[in-house]
Length: 563
Image (cartoon, rainbow, N blue to C red; front, side, top):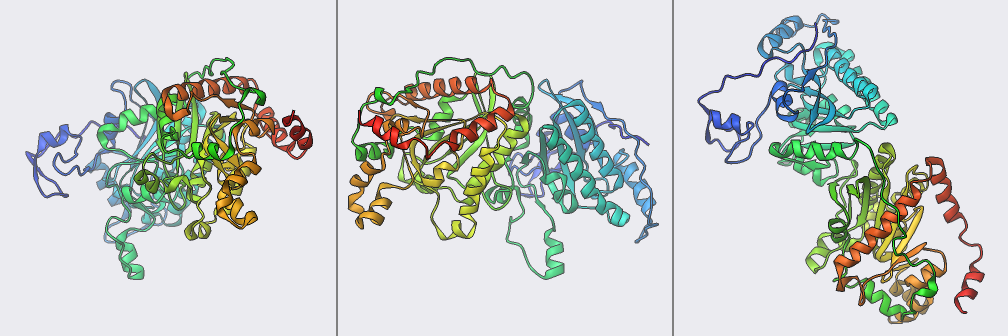
């Protein structure tokens, strides 16, 4: 048999009772609203054909025809024989199996799609389903086209025993091949997605989107309760909970999925012209910068009126899609990361997030990332390497979070991993210290081919207060420590810590944030253009050489600064 797309089910009840709010909804209105309750927003189930029709451009959907043979290797019988269950599922759904694969476009951008249908034996992952998922991945690999996986499953198919279990490995291998080839993969998690599907291809995509309220997990609530007598908190396995714990990138309502998919696909498709060149108006000779009182510079860099990373992203970039989570433990609010575009060039952007008010600072942990923030940054850097996208980081932090939970989560290891990862990225990396660059928490985003600083920024191994408390035994000596640490942009350029300084408007970036953003954009574009001439191996070697020279010639630099 072969998988083909049956006609959409046109039978609509006169009235539908919403399982969420229990309100009656006029049937035709419910269908027009993509089976989303207009009162409570609960997302009802869609069939695989309905998914294809709702996500892909009309008129261009081409089913992927692939031989499918679902046998009965175990001769499995519960209350009914397995072949009988299969026959019933086919008659009821019009599908050959629990997944429907097709080739199509979203707003003109091509992709391969594999859509699961929960009506077919609970969307269970059997040998045929695993084979079809792998075939879709192989097609995406061969055509170098992004792959979209729409999941809806109760888990592996019990009627096929260990053969079904093996499909977790089969599909995961297929996803690994796409990683190695640099092909974008996206998962759209719908309700429910459990068991072997959640523990294989659904969780391995570059970007994981979920519909509101979609549940996802390895073991469902009923299984957990019946096996270990433990009850899950309400909403624990919903998309919203998973997003807050770092396992999802986005939760998107059904009405916005096409737009969201089109934006994500645009970052990985088409020609990449590369940013235009130019000198970027950078200052590369420290003598062109005025001398400044060090403590004044520190206080200026901490000014809450200065543009934040969020402000710069909104004004520097032509487009930005924030992604969330480290896929391990959380989603530190002190790090913002995602896919962006500047002058037609797609890139990955990562930065520290502070705020302009006390409320914003508290919400973002004062710009001090926990380990999940650095691991989120690392995940996005790996995505940049996979898709061959440049990386731009914006540094503005007093340092990594010093709390108990951060230490328990492996703060030192997370920072160390970023230092190693950044050193070997085969893509251009530009880092800019826009405000406060504090210690290893800043350097974890700073191992770049080109490191810049705004003229009002500071960068140091420790805060002046920390240095004063340790060496002066008095935190009130912070101004003296700031002077001794040579933290300002002029000294950073003199010592070669930064390669160039972006001049801020008179009075600081906070006085004219739009102008400050325009100058920063110009500088970043210029540096990306220069680095675009280097190949992957050259970029890695360039970065290695840049940091390898520190420790040599510092006496000369200090003497030169006194002339």
